[in-house]
Length: 146
Image (tube, rainbow, N blue to C red; front, side, top):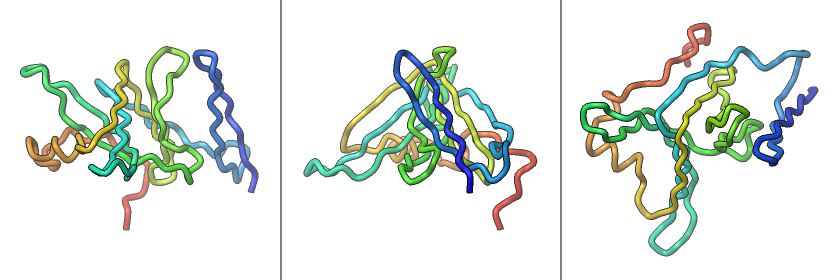
């Protein structure tokens, strides 16, 4: 299997993404969505042990000014697009990840990184049932999971 290496220079830092390429152009069309804020959250136990890292996509509610979780994903170091937020050339924070074989991109003008014992996504669930969250659009051409 061929590998396509993407090297992106942003803010003087090189970001390298390795993408499996079974044909010359294997990256399918991006599903690009903009949210109000992206948070990289590092979750720890009360004893200080690192448990997981997650990326939370927030939407601001105009009426109250509060932020509500729109979606979240765990970072995946084993995946070629490892879901870690980075700044792109237009100054937006972005996260790229695979979704049903397609590459999805979530962008935001705001970025926040947090470390703590509380899971912000779980805390948000207590205020609003996840079934009422504003979902990220799905790829219209992607197959539904079986």
